[in-house]
Length: 376
Image (cartoon, rainbow, N blue to C red; front, side, top):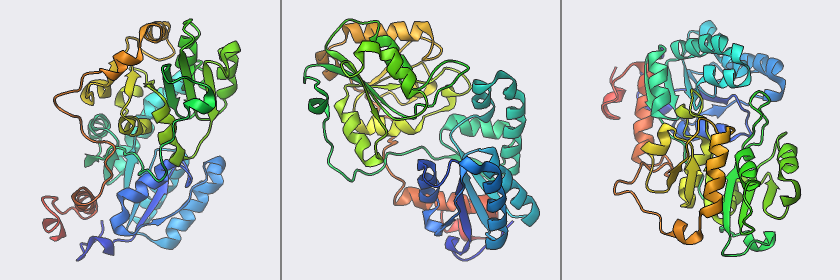
């Protein structure tokens, strides 16, 4: 491990995001370690093997005291673990997904190798930063030596929020269901984000209910085909937008869909969308995942069903679309105990606490307070 120094910023920290430098994960890991003035090393997930080799060589050249890795992609993580073994220096892992369950969602037989890989990651890292307390518990159970929770947060607004109803021809008294996310198609379960909304609205006859889906991916054409003659009328596929424009599209909606499976994938997540959804102050419909209970401030609507691609969930969502009204939505109760603020950026004392904790993960010092963390 690294010898203690008089200031946390003496540590030479490199950040890496397995999803790539242009992914929000890269912004997250750099923000979490901003007090250390980290150097970010890019990883190109479209060229995983060659990029992994380049990452390993770059880490050997930079000789950092610590690498902070966001994500569990095998290319980036493999390079970081190889560097850690060779240099005998630590790395910290941050993740928002349970690897084994996520791999099994693509191919069932991948659960066992995914579990083995996930266990190795937890046991090899000097510390784990989970997006949720559920993942922190999982990491500790599987062998992580130390762990902490750092929830996601909504990016600061840089542009005025614009309501897009007029440009889509949606009246003010219509009820709009919406979603923002990647439309990556999962062949095994026949689903991508937004599929539940399009399937549900096709089971309703109300002309004053609309669906807005913001995002792109190989599932977009499938959603367009599923929408049929409702495409451009009641179903609006917007495509990809900049992060600065996301709040405006969320504000255009009355109800936001947070589709997650009630299993080892969805039940461990908050998802990157949740903070932005809470910031938008809209009703959120989701499954009966733990977060839907733990973070409910009166806006969560939990729909029965084990997954958003199952018949029961879609039927319940269609029923909500058929009978919901804007008046009902505007009179939602609020919780007497507000949930934690996921939209609050890590600034001030929160970053100070995080810096002390990260330093402790590297030096073994206690994290009672920033002063104590400087003691050998």
